[in-house]
Image 1 (cartoon, helix red, strand yellow):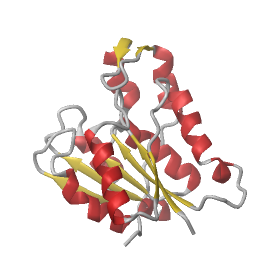
Image 2 (tube, one colour):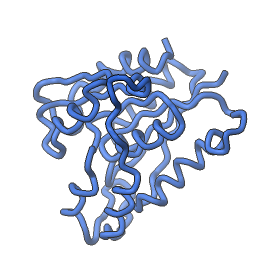
Image 3 (cartoon, rainbow, N blue to C red):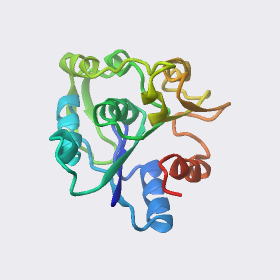
Image 4 (cartoon, rainbow, N blue to C red):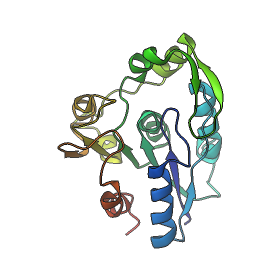
Length: 202
């Protein structure tokens, strides 16, 4: 069956981000049979989720999927979206320095924003915080098989997010905690084989 990877970039990011491009190159080179999808996300949470769910639509409709199995990789805010989607569609998901409470973090970004990759100018609003809060997922429990759907990778030197929030929430899932580093996840290339193994591609 065809395997597909959905890579979800973070806030104010793009498929052209270094981590997204490294991931795409790695999977294209080592797993050419895997379909890699990384869309430019809409700037509002509701529209971004709708966009991502359209990619996963056959699962959403609970019909036999014509396009195989989906696996998810999410970075930062993309990790928050990946958590929601993985729970809804029961997919394996890798979360890289994931946002845990973005509806609090992004309060500081309300107002005009400019995406440095696309140059699009847009507004972050209070309504976006409401939309983000609405898709918050509970922490996987020790006796919940769902906990096995996650590989969570954090670096303690993350200057944007509190890594401990992710450690606390996903304490019963597979965790990689590295000392130092930053929000970009330094040495990410070295973790790609581990990601591929977790996604059962090896």
